[in-house]
Length: 335
Image (cartoon, rainbow, N blue to C red; front, side, top):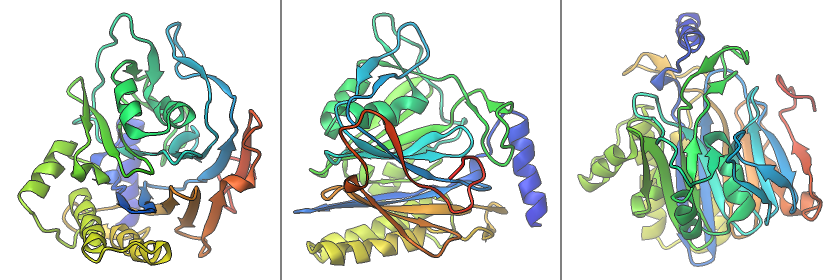
């Protein structure tokens, strides 16, 4: 059964598409007084080196490979996670406490707006870098996103193909951002339009369908089932965080311990089959973020040892990328 399912997934990628049932990443953000924390799972077939890097202040970047690209010198030091063969920035947080997550949203929903003359370009796979390099809060970032063209040039090299010659024409993704003040936003591109959600529900995100569907579930007070479908995993994580608010958890250590429950309820073992879709949603790693103190705790599915990262681990004033950690048996990148 397992080999058959992985073969189906591989066939989907080789044909230039990515099956919508292949992923179910989940996020949950909690903010109460001085406690500003979050959780996200990374769910995908195969393996992720999840290389953690530190970018110092002052790195000059072009955020797209076009003549009209946004170019800037980074204002903030940031920690980032490089994922898979194409080294996608899938997770990022800067020293000011702005964090961003890239999650999967299938191509049944994702399509990007046509570029607007007079606006500069940011490639969708550079959006997290642009955000944490240059902004320190969600409201300013949301305003800035509306003033640029988010362009897409496709996505290559993802598992299980692991070959940069195999590409999806459309990058299937959407984003969540959070800051120390507790502002959150979900950003996605649906039917050729930029969609931005900043209501309370944007503190919780998963995958398909588009985010408006999940907000409708919130409004109708739908209760989660035990499946590992994206909607159920998001709702279960939401239930955990809502309970934290009811109990008014303001002690940092107590809040971190409580948020582990959100990670646990969203976690899917590497071989767990969801009978509703007859497929697997392997969780490759879970990240716990403390935005107030600039700390990450990374829990990989196969190492049985959590890794801690913070801004004291690299020279934040050195204008270069510095490696902080990687999977102990990397597949795509050297240690």
